[in-house]
Length: 236
Image (cartoon, rainbow, N blue to C red; front, side, top):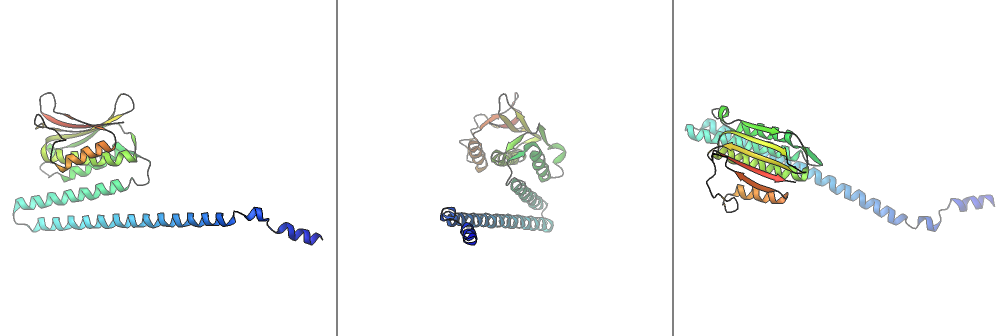
């Protein structure tokens, strides 16, 4: 009798095992989900790696062509193109490094970004076209940092292409809880009546779209004497 009682006590009751199939199914689904996430992560990293390799190949080809080009002006343009593609590749790395992070020390990011853009300038330009980062560091959510990085990248490209003199990138807090980031270069100032919304340039349309994405506001300042151009993005 004691043996019979022991065997009975060792047998799980129907009520105790009633959720066993459901639990096993849930565990299996979780394992499958983890597997899908892992495979997607591997694919993303592989795609990023291939893109960077492709960009590096473009840089190498442009650099080689610039060295072989007998026309000095064409060689200079090819070399500048190689520098720009190399900068795009590094920006991609910087943006990809944000993956999985909740926040970014954004001034530190700007320091790295602007250092790369400085390399885009020709040797004769650098003494007169310094790119300076000012302000204090703040931790910004990654969801805001990535669009801001693209905005600053586009504004820097415009400042290098159209402006003169020193370029200043400034990150600062505003009264309340918001922040502002600006890209400013010495003249020539934008023409009176310039309307970024009405412009046909793809770059400015991208900036406006990204500003809207983060719920920000774009402002344009020409300086007291119409001797500079400053784009500022106010965001909360």
